[in-house]
Image 1 (tube, one colour):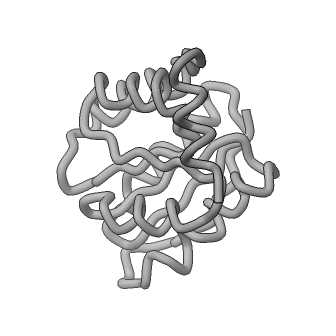
Image 2 (image 1 turned 90 degrees about the vertical axis):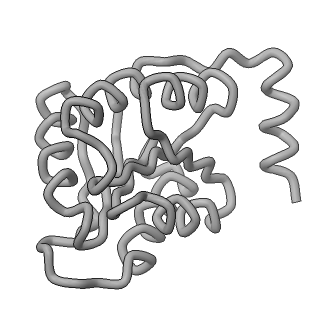
Length: 143
């Protein structure tokens, strides 16, 4: 899978660890930055990662910040992106099963690394259920 990754300064450390994790799992990772802990404006990095998903040059995206809230909001401004802010395995699983989330937002300041790694694995491995959920996804993607 080709996965876009992006963060602001507050998510940079986990972004680097996630980039290595994804590569170790056999995924092709496209890193949209940032490249340090120096303060930046997160939309400048998150929007291009979300656009890569919308244009289908990447299958999914993982975005990070201190809380992940702003990053999820920025990603969800891009038409065709369904970014879920996840805080545990269950929220990650449901974001895929019920919402076909194609982007994942995580907060480095709020999550332990062990939780992040488990959330990512579940999010990557969980398929979309379809069925009644497909109708709702169509509504989300409509004008």
